[in-house]
Length: 137
Image (cartoon, rainbow, N blue to C red):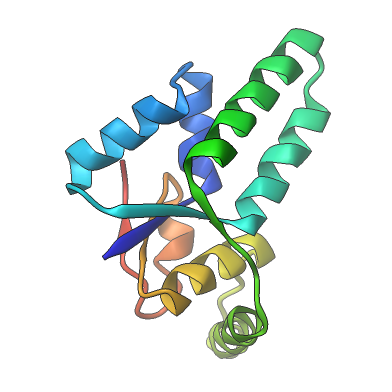
């Protein structure tokens, strides 16, 4: 079984000044040896956060964190099957009165498509995605 690491987990780790290696060590400690990956959506969210940083030093530190992360982990692209799965989940949940964020839908659908779980700090949002196993670090 593998895991997709959600943006919220990475942002929390970065704020605590953890390196990519430390995040992977924490992941192994919490969940054992597992394949870890990111959705391409997470890269977009992290890049967005870097550009919004007010201080050059923070922007540089965040960029270095992202560069290290990309070098050490597989990034899963959004392919047609994932987009279709996210659309079906979104429609089903909307019919039930639940609205999920576009980003969380795509990250969750990426995990489901690959038979992975999601590691997140945002458990409540991801638990609204049927059949997705949600864990924390």
